[in-house]
Image (cartoon, rainbow, N blue to C red; front, side, top):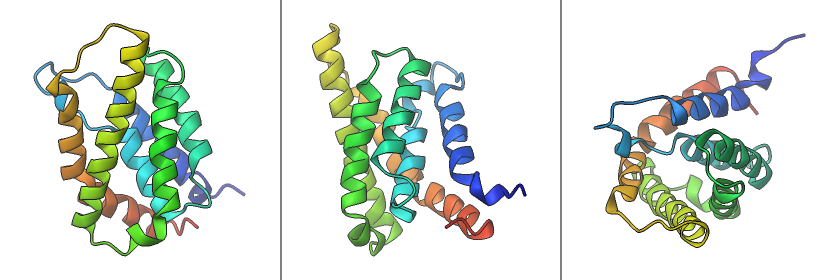
Length: 159
């Protein structure tokens, strides 16, 4: 029998992937948050037994293909950040949503630092402060993303 609750995690990550590649106006595009990172971060905090480093790695590969970056760049960065989240999920769950937002912001900056280092080694890119706008927008959006995904998890009884 088809039960939607078994597919909620995959559907939310798929929605995050779609938001990540959706075309946006040129003025707003530098501020695009890392939707896939935020969705995986929520699920690895909420259900670390179902969403962990392996899921992050696979979705990082998909993100590399969608964004056209060399294979393994986003998968390594997402895996590293998800490992930190999964290793500390018991502690992070007890923080308030705004404290979690600060931690998510720090991890998002770590994620972008890993992506920048790898791309710097592979290509000839230079650091630009516009690379850090998604960290700020992701940090500010975390409370709403957390509330939305928690509501979805409770409504569909995802365990």
